[in-house]
Length: 514
Image 1: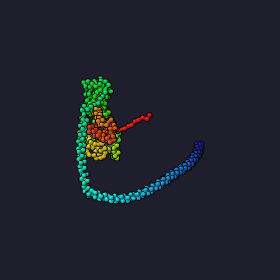
Image 2: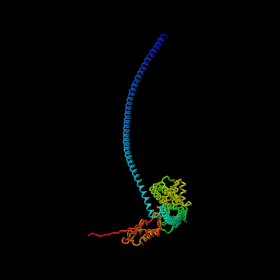
Image 3: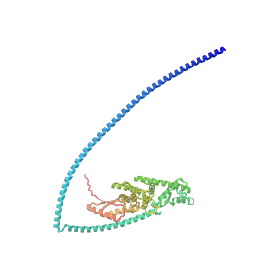
Image 4: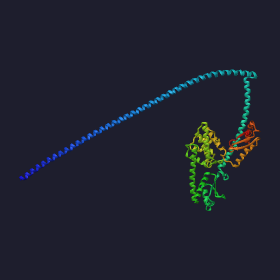
């Protein structure tokens, strides 16, 4: 029992000793960790203080650099402003000196004008005095008063004016007759163009070359089904005759004729010709022609320098590529009129943009006159109004043939440019025979006069140069000769525009020194 008690006491003591030792060890470990933590904390604080000090120094350096930079920029700006102020001051001083000089010059001019006014006043008084003296002398010599002489002069002038008025009325009547005849010819020609038959071969026929004559049979097809399909789809007549390796396309509509031509050429190249293939190629040809029309319209606006047109107007302009008038391509004619009107407007100080726009659109109605009723002028005005063109542009279209009154100078210029373009020699097709006859007749008229040695019709009949014999025709007779020649040409020939007649008289004396 005592042993157990002793062991128990020993065990309790050992436990207490272990607890004490453990407590001491734990305390030492905790104190060690605490010391290390304090040391680490002190180190971190020291590092932080060093870093903060370094950052502070860097910030101070950057701030100093920034302050130096700003100061330098401010100094530079101040110097620039100072220099600019000096420059402005010098300019102001120069202007003041210049104005002073001008002021002095104006004062001198004013003094000179004042002196001239005085001189003019003096001369006027002297002139009036002389006039009164001369009038009194004339009344004494003539035995008439001023009022009586005035009445006689007015009577004579009245008689002369009446005579000149009668001559002018006669000339106007003649001009009216000529204009009526001209308008009648234009109406007839326009009707022929719009309702063209097959005999107008120059504007209604296209020829497609074939690789061989066997292709004609393939184009016709079995029982003529291919040619019927092509004619039905395009609205164009195919003429297959004895012409070797060629097919003639005939039709009044140039766009349809172009579609048929392109489709037929594609079929010939492809080699497969049957109704279904024909329909496909006609569709492709239509798309191709539509694209060509669009491109032609855009190119025309670019060449004429006219912008901001409605896309539909551009497309209608492109249709003019396939429209002719008296053999003249209407699209090229419209571009030429735009250029001419623009140049004349620039020379006169008018609105160039309006003149070019009106010139380009003046024949717009010709693209639709096959499909719509009315004259091309009215159709063009309606189209321009539909697509919101200005009133002045509409007037340029409506007035270029005199259908309505001119509302602007630009409309007059468009009409003049249209006449110039149409009257230019070679612009509107004539037969070669008539052209040669006119040139021959022109030279015959010149050669029929006495004293003419030889003559030459040049510049497509716009000018004739006449060489005369100097021993028969002197300077005075040459003047009379050119007038007589001009009168005879005017009475016997019909021609567009005007013909220049040049008389050349030359005397040469040649000798040789030996």
